[in-house]
Length: 134
Length: 134
Image 1: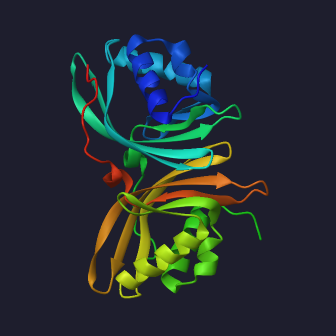
Image 2 (image 1 turned 180 degrees about the vertical axis):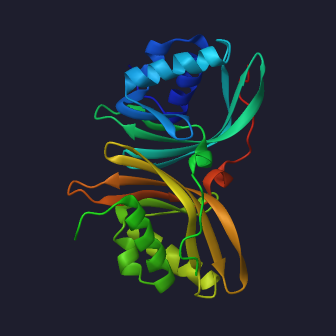
């Protein structure tokens, strides 16, 4: 394996999702990665994440399409935050743009792996209520 | 120091910003933390972050107010993503709500510290352009 960048890993992930190549897709996640399936429901670990992607793809008639409409990476040592405009669509599903947030970690052998995959961004916040505001 | 939660650290940070207690504020950051000052401009490391907060507070007439209008934490091992509705205001500045994104790391002695502080969320994405869309 060659060294990679986070942008390259995201491209590998997007292409693997669309090719339904779940072995390659799982190679970009850490062993204890968390994937938000939908607000208030997450998959933890590669087996759950693999199963979740199979079901998500089935939901999109097995033709889920994913693309990034701009993204930015902020690195701090072996940790990185990605904010991305992620477009999701399917044959019978109009494209929607999600404000996705991903966290990557650099492994001991220098590979960036996804530890937290939250394509829903701030949609996962429950019942906002102002706490001690001024 | 007692064990803490990420929510407690964010509360400490917000209170320290408003009290202009920069020593306490710096205690919640990792040594190589990144703070987004504004889109396309970041501070790296505690000294730069401290100076940035002093200037940000001056910009808000030294009465910067910060509050969280709902937040959610996603943990994966020693790494956590926080998405938060962060409200920023000052005496002559109407309150604005930012879709903030923070990354925390657990230190070897078990304390959650902020490694990436991006209160601008997706506003930092430059010139979105659709890449290989379907």
